[in-house]
Image (cartoon, rainbow, N blue to C red; front, side, top):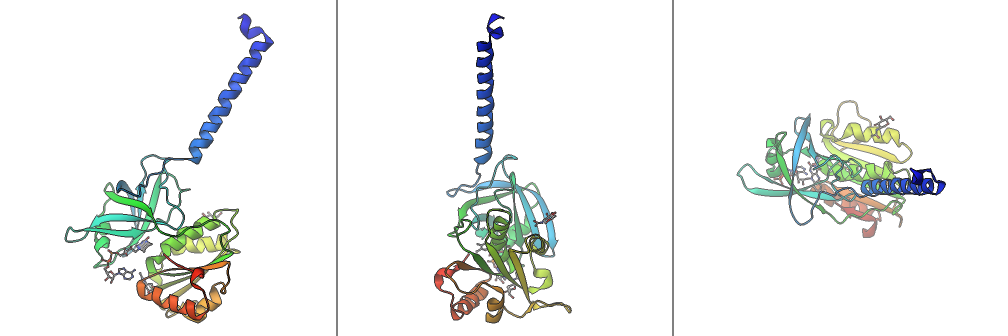
Amino acid sequence: MEFLETSEGQLYIGVAVGLIAVSAAAYFLFSSKKPKVCLDPEKFKEFKLVKRTQLSHNVAKFKFALPTATSVLGLPIGQHISCRGKDSLGEEVIKPYTPTTLDSDVGYFELVIKMYPQGRMSHHFREMCEGDYLAVKGPKGRFKYQPGQVRAFGMLAGGSGITPMFQVTRAILENPNDKTKVHLIYANVTYEDILLKEQLDSLATNYSDRFKIYYVLNQPPEVWNEGVGFVSKEMIQTHCPAPAADIQILRCGPPPMNKAMAAHLEALGYAPEMQFQF
Ligand SMILES: Cc1cc2nc3c(=O)[nH]c(=O)nc-3n(C[C@H](O)[C@H](O)[C@H](O)COP(=O)(O)OP(=O)(O)OC[C@H]3O[C@@H](n4cnc5c(N)ncnc54)[C@H](O)[C@@H]3O)c2cc1C
Ligand SMILES: *[C@@H]1O[C@H](CO)[C@@H](O)[C@H](O)[C@H]1NC(C)=O
Ligand SMILES: CC(=O)N[C@H]1CO[C@H](CO)[C@@H](O)[C@@H]1O
């Protein structure tokens, strides 16, 4: 055809092909930057349990599918979700949980749950089987994080209070532009109670210049060279950043531990704005 043979025609076709390529690239970039967010702060949505992995006698990891393989949960760093279930009497119960996954993990999210014998929501999780649905609402929480917000975080975690710390730590370490340092003190009763130990140790090895962990056990095993007893003022002094305007200490543990930690921090001279409790 005459049209195609003119150099002007070739130019037009070239421009047209170029435009299509550019808009396809833009569409791809746009859609991959703005994936579908699944959480709704106003209403509960159901997510399917696709895998349940027992981690110890009373701890399991629950993997939930999002509606599509490219969906993201849509949870800001350090915030949590509300999960709804039924206790052993069939009564509705709603409790907060922090996924151990980030929005960079597309298509699914995971919860690591410690199930207490008498726990109401624990009962619901104990009964959940692969294929069941969990009602979830969110995001919830006052914690806000921007890279560079502080020079260093100290973290005081007890038991399942590790999950928000783990999530914040992962987000910091996996961002190559974030230079924030993280000093974690993690308290538990026994060695077997330590949640996410393998993942935590792996992060500490891979990012040894930015992330340090000090484990504290009430009932340590025979060979143990980290902390023993409850978290003390001296442990905080040794293993956390000293009071300063550009640091923050995060707390998340059972209520008695949080109370004790708040008293330690005050005695050590940490101002209220240097502290946050999940
Ligand atoms: C922000 C936030 C995030 C959380 N994220 C997680 C998470 O990712 N994974 C997780 O497993 N939990 C998490 N929790 C704790 C969770 O919300 C529930 O409190 C927990 O699952 C117990 O609920 P339950 O209804 O089974 O127990 P309940 O019915 O409230 O308690 C029954 C009994 O269980 C025991 N018990 C309950 N909680 C504790 C505890 N913390 N330490 C020691 N004994 C306890 C007590 O003896 C209590 O009498 C989080 C809490 C908060 C505030
Ligand atoms: C640590 O690095 C190893 C080797 O590169 C990698 O396989 C592993 O997934 C990393 N772990 C974490 C928690 O980043
Ligand atoms: C779930 C659990 O075992 N939590 C315990 C971990 O250790 C801290 C500190 O000793 C206790 O306060 C928690 O109850």
